[in-house]
Length: 206
Image: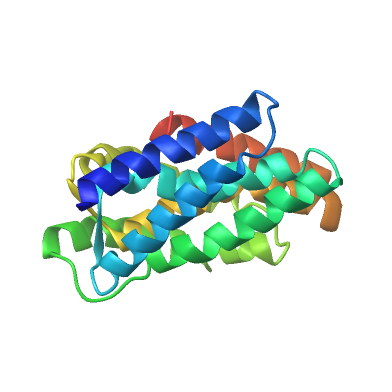
């Protein structure tokens, strides 16, 4: 199968898996196995490339976060299975988006603008990971840049893996909510992070 056919299967299997979870029908092992198989083939094919097709973007950036959310529903065996599956698929996705080589100058300039806003005064996501809380001033700068560039990014048929990884970080922003609630015990910060997530999500994924 060519990449287009594989991506069609990827989109369908990911959608089916998540729909069944949302409907309360449990974790569908067959759909998950299909998803893993397709992602593994694509990871092998995309190794050494620095782009992925636009059509593969959404399932690549959302599936780990969505599955992880469902694993938080309870502490039973089903939730443990979903979390294990999420962590396993995260490893394959990292292979799919492993950055190699250079990209064309125009796209590099667009990504550089966003990267600079994320790195200013310390990496935005690393500060969250360390428990430093949400840097609201930095968030505003990031939001301004995102608002200016996201439509151009979505117009690209091939997306640089660098921007895919950045958008994946934004999609997973709300996972910090659980960390701040349960690990850091910073409930006000957790609320701020969730509000930031909803704002960015509605802009670039809504």
